[in-house]
Length: 490
Image (cartoon, rainbow, N blue to C red; front, side, top):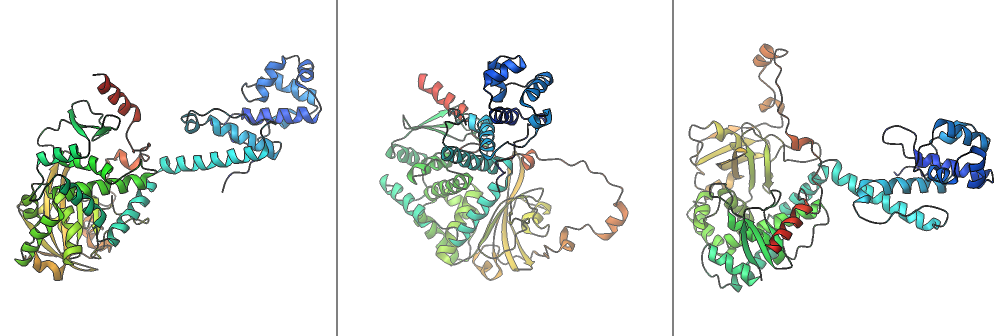
């Protein structure tokens, strides 16, 4: 519900709102039938000074206010009331406040004066537009809830599709055909051929802005990429292909955070579909399934990609082509879920909004128990009995600069027979979300330590931060333009 146009917006510092004061002064002067010149003569102040006060651009001294009030035959309190003197005045006050906000100033648009010459319908329209602009800016910057809602909607769409996007598979197949790629994994030479076929050149630089993974100069059809040192955990081929994916898939500039997330998922999918082409990947998986030896490790090694990329690609293909429902998680060593997907009815922990990311995985799940294994870096398999059924999981640990993460692919019990490790005897029982499972300390520990412990919490700044602003969230446009300018003159 929007604020009443008769209510003056409060001053940020709690002082008298000068715009409202000016409107009340003008209203009372006109009601008295006085001109500025006449009021000026009565109070001994120049008309220009009174005009500045009426326009909310100057704060009058108390002595001046007392003189004005006396000349108008009202009390000083009548001038200082927070209410607008009329509905029209209230709209003009609201317009003035809107146009002083940083969000409007950043647009570089002219300031519209709300005087009598501005038609009432034009004023109403401007106020409506400003209210909507303010609502959108507030929604985008106030909390991460926008991102949470967008991510939930995207996950629901991925589940509905079984994480398979035929239109992206077809787009990737057409690109591969255009460079006559007919067998096996995609080489670096093949990636260069794809870029050239699409009309782009690649340039590896050392001064790419830190908030970007790549920058594309659309005027000169050049993609700038970082000079990635080995051992950082990123496949430079994927970065190139993700960037090209935006153009192959016809992505416009994202209109909101939901668009941004969807485009990122689609670009990542496109890159994986080139690095692990559907035809060859499905043939490989079909042979492994026939041998009852499906394994993410083998899938990774066959196409020379990271374990996480292979796990994601596995979820793209295995349900659609083989009818095997699956779930995927990426869990930090602290137990925090960073990524999750499921179409097998596994029950992930979630908050009251339904968000999964940021929640803690059950301590009995394979994604957590692997960290306590004697040899966590070897092949790890586990059955877990849960409230929604029994699941088999294969887990791998990846080390990053942010700590260690477990990457898990799981499936219901009856499908474990198709996987290597499906005969494991390792088994746990999880009753989460029952707090007795793993979220409530044992009674003996509570009795011994309750009231005698005071941990100093490590607060993660990203939990408190607003959603990054911008068309491409977190990317500073000035950094991007200055980079391109440097490159254009070098």
